[in-house]
Length: 462
Image (cartoon, rainbow, N blue to C red; front, side):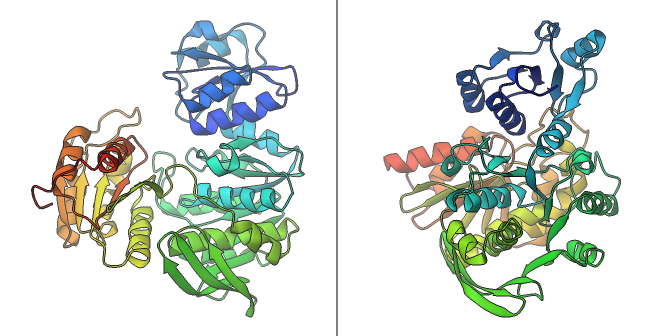
């Protein structure tokens, strides 16, 4: 039902995962339509490929003759377009199920994990592309250096980010399965951290080969059941190991060892130890895909971080970066990357908690995550269409930071007010970083524009 000439409608087509899948199917000759509440860069690209995009949702968009509709995990079962499809007997397919079907037609690398999967997927695609293997890929963020977040090319390999949020990754069968780490998230889907671990384990069992980052204790535990897996890690015993890490702003270097034997000094154009772990996963996956480590290392040098992954917005005496990190471990890793790559800088973080459910479950964990920051401004929760949970607010995060760290923490109610506060208190040499999966990027983007114009004034202390 997703072959050339078939008709497929996407509900929520503007989402990064949905738009990428729609783009690949359109490249295969599938006639694509879709609906969403707003247009964006991705829907513009789809229109150029001939897709019909509807602004807003309506049962009228589900027309007779459709072979299937594909839904994102954010679409509820009682959505009007879903109900219209069911009434007409049109199959309703979750995005990850559709992606799993697509991967069965290729040799595939699937990248899963609580953190780092977008960056790792982009690294693998970059290595394969720059070594002439013409990979297809689906990545959970725009990757300007790769020409976007999705591509259907002529090579035998398809590299895909495998999302665990709705539990459907157990339907994905990758030839090479990469697992970066296991953390506590998406507790609306999973009953516990152990439940998450079991789901990742099932995903791994369905693959021919596995790449496991054993710096993560739970991944290391899973590795005991996969004796043929390729293990990677920083300063731990593993098949591929990174030692002697060096940090210099946007560049990280390390010595690569294969089963105890030195291979080469690797130059990675990305900051922080967490990205070294991602790079090790990418190098291992590329080796399993048939490349030599030397080839993979050279391909990795061409890597550029995806959009909103520690993305530089301005460097004008003050460094301004936007980062998608929204879980405690991710935020802690990014702040540590600043401390190692830009030692001595004052770090001012702006954080927008993502989802009421996540804040309720993890809010107290954010205190330690921000221990490396000097000042933290916390904005109201970005709901991501969730209903408000009474008693759950950003105040929980502020209280955790004040309780567990010496960082200064302050709740600021609007993005405009946050920009004004930053404009008033920043000083030359500051490192400003925004964290969140919502729209907190608007704060740092506006601040970058102000800095570029050179119009900011120093008035008060942060």
